[in-house]
Length: 325
Image (cartoon, rainbow, N blue to C red; front, side, top):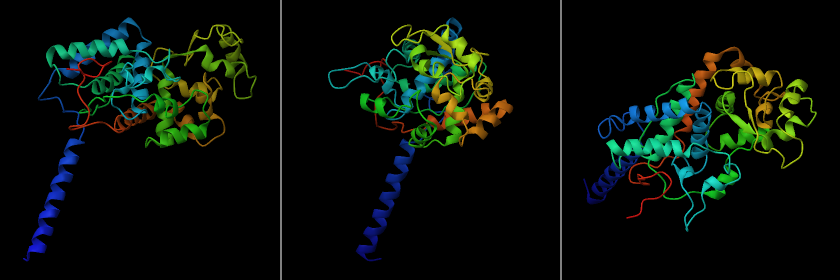
């Protein structure tokens, strides 16, 4: 073998080794902490169960917090960061301000994990596990959470403004937003099914209940108006359940509501409004097992959005701040 060919072989081997190393570093696994913090998952689960038992609504808040994290620069815990002199917090972006919640629950779980395994488990992973445990706590599905994410050292206020779906979004906009994150229209509908639990503030559904449109049940609109005045700025923060029928149980009633024109948000009802997702809503309304299975699969896939792994990112000591020595 001449020297040129030998160099070519050596280069090819080096490339393969580099690719193997990259793949290893980027690999998420449910067993990631089995050797380094074997009690991490049970510790998180106990902490989340306590939080949801104190306030049932917290389950929806934690699932939403995970979603808002993953849709902005990936599942890296950036939504948990407070502002610094070098970046704005995602918490103050319009889609999050006075809306996303559960930060103190994640911090509490982090403190418990730090007691047994300091500096090992990331906030991004704790948030991912918390979303799963919150679902289970209210009768929703479980799934294997892949682990090994690391925490970001920065947040993106600007991406939180542009990448998070709006409660006023059209169907095409929702499909586009989710597609940008590698999620299909079916996965978008399944993930929207998390609105079977939780509540929304008056200001995000006011336009819908006072629209007198053909896509909303008149009786439903009338009921919602009792707690949500027509005037902007009046009662803006008053809450209403996203699912009026079983607001604290993770089931498929959300989809049944949509078929009866009783979706609370504009972005809910567009899923069943004569468009391309009508058949999916209909299927989920009739087959709860299919919905729960699809929701679990979509949550796993969402958790794979642009994680920081290997030597990228850090393991924060507290979730709201970057580590400083």
